Image 1: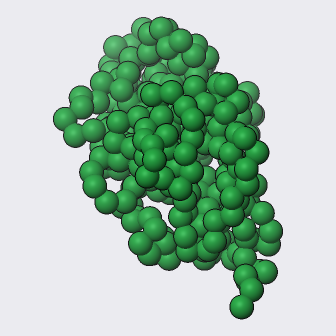
Image 2: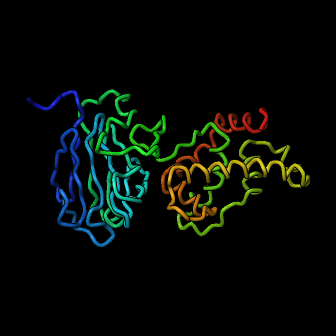
Image 3: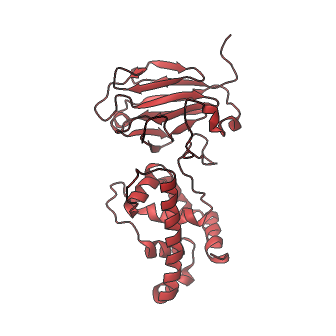
Length: 289
C-alpha cells in the first residue's frame, strides 16, 4: 500500500545536498558519531548523538538528545536553543514543524552554513491532531513543558506568555536591555526600574512624577512588579528550563526567556504599537491589580 497522500512528508537535507525522507511514525537520529542514522561532519560543538527528527501525525518534531551540547533551531529569523536531555528517556521539549522548514545544528554549523534542513511538505493534517501529544507514542514523551504560541504555527515552545497580559510587559521590560545588546553586557533593570518602565510604556506620565517623589506609591508599584517576577521564576522552575539547583538570578531568568524565544527581539515592536500599549494601560491602571 502506498503512502497516505493526505499526510505531510518530512524530509531532512544534509549540507552535502542529500535528502532523506522520514516515514510517518519513524525517527532519524543525527550526530557526529557512528551509531546514528545521519553522520554530520562537525567539530566538538556537536554531540556524537546530537538530535532527532521524528515524523509524527501533523508534521515533524525536532529535539536535542545530547546531555552535554547545545543544539539550535532557526526559522523566520528566530534562533532557539533546544533544551538538553536531563536524564535518560525521551526529550521533554523541542521544536514542532507543521509546515515549512527549519534549520538545525550547533552554533558553528549554523554560522558556517552547514546546518541540517528539516522540511515538512505536502497537505497539512488537521491541526487538532497534534494538540494531544499522546499521539507521539514512543517518539516523544510529553512532560508538560511544550506549549504553542497561538500566532506562531511552526513551533512548540516550552513556555508561553500572552502579550495581552501584565506578565508579558514585565518580562519584556526585564529582557529589553539584552534584546538590544546581544553581548549581554548591559545591566538588567531591577524591580523599581521595571516598574517605572511600565509607567512609561503605558503612557502613564501623570504617575511618573508621583513614582519619583512618593516612596509609598513607588513601593506599592514595585511590589506588584515583584510578584510578576516571582511568577516568571516559578514558571521557569516548574517547566524544568533550568537544571535543578541553579539559582534563578535575574541574569539566569532573562537568559532563559531569550534563549527559549519566550521573549524575542520581535516583541520589541509591541512598544510602538498603540493598540498594545492601550491594552496594557487598561490592565495596569483601569483594573484593580
